[in-house]
Image 1 (cartoon, rainbow, N blue to C red):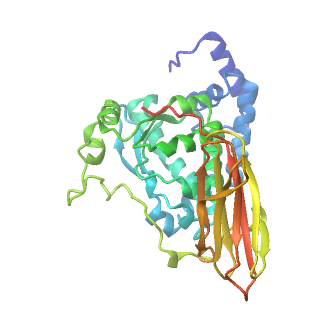
Image 2: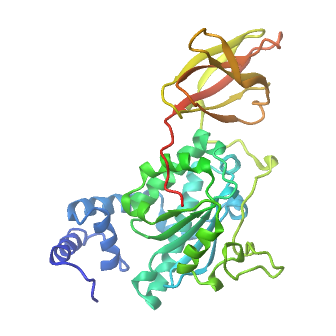
Image 3: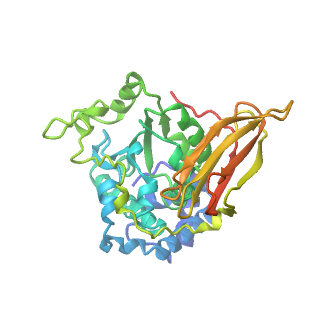
Length: 388
C-alpha cells in the first residue's frame, strides 16, 4: 500500500503507531492514523494525545454502542438532512437544507445531550459508509461531501444561548473527533447575515476544515457548476442542478432528504436542560420599569437580547441615546411581548458607537410584579466571510 509519504512523515507514522498500539482497533489502519497526524501537523506526540482524548470521549458517550440507541422521533421527523448518493470519486453526498433546522423547537423536546448523541450516531454512520466506499473506490472515497442549503437562514434562533452554544459544541466535537473527514462542503444561497454567523463559528474550525468550505450567495449560475464538477447529476436532487426527483416530481427529493421545518409548539416538553443560570433575573415591580444602559464601542457591533417572563407578558423596547444632548429615541419600539409563552430573541446592528437603553416596562400593570430572566450581549462586528 503506497501512502506517498516523505521519509520524515513515514517516520512520524511509525512512531505514532507504536505509541498508540495499545488502543488501536482492527479498522484503525494507516489511513486512519494519518488523519490524526495531519491534524496535528505531523507531531506524533500531539496526535497521540488527540487520539487518546477522542477515544475517551467516545467511551464517555458510549459512541460505539449507539447503533442500539434509537434516535428520538422528533429528530427523525424534523432534522433536515439526507444522503442523496455519491460523488464522482464514490464519497457519500449529504444534503442539509439548513434553514429547516428548528433548534428552538428541537431543544424543547429533546435534551442537548440527546442531540449530541444524534449527531455522533449520524456522523459515525456516514463514516462507516465512506469506509465501505473506500474498499471499492480507494481512499478518495473515505470522506464525505456536503451541500448546505442556507436559503431562508435566520440568525435569530442562534442568538438563543442554548442553540448557539450547541452549534459551537457540534463544531468543537467534530474538530476534535472527526479530523480530515470532510472532502468538500458547499454552502449555497448564503444571505448577507450569514457572514456574521460564519465570522463567529470559523474561529472554532481548523485550517483544513476552512479550506474545504466554499460559500456562495443565491446565484445558481455560480454554485451549480461548482457542485456538478464533483457530484454527478444522477446523484444530486434536481433542486441543486441534478436529476433526482421524487415519484411525484418534487425536485427537492424529499423522499430521501428531510426538509425539517417548524416544530409544533404542542409537542414541546418541559425538559429544557438550560436553567436560568445564564440569565440575570429581576422582578419588575407593578406600575414600575427597569431601564439600564449598554454601550456598543465599535461600528457594526451587534446588540443581541433574549428574555422570558414568568406567567405574564411585559413591555420591552430599546432606546438610543443622543451623545450630544442625551435625548433618547426608540429604535426597538416599546411594546407588550408575550415572553411568558416563548423566549423573546432579537438583534440590532449598531451603525455607530452608541449607548442604548434597554427597557422592561411594567407601568401598565398595577396588580402584578413581573419576574424576568434576561441576557443582553454586545457581539463584535462581523468580519467578512468569503462568499462567492
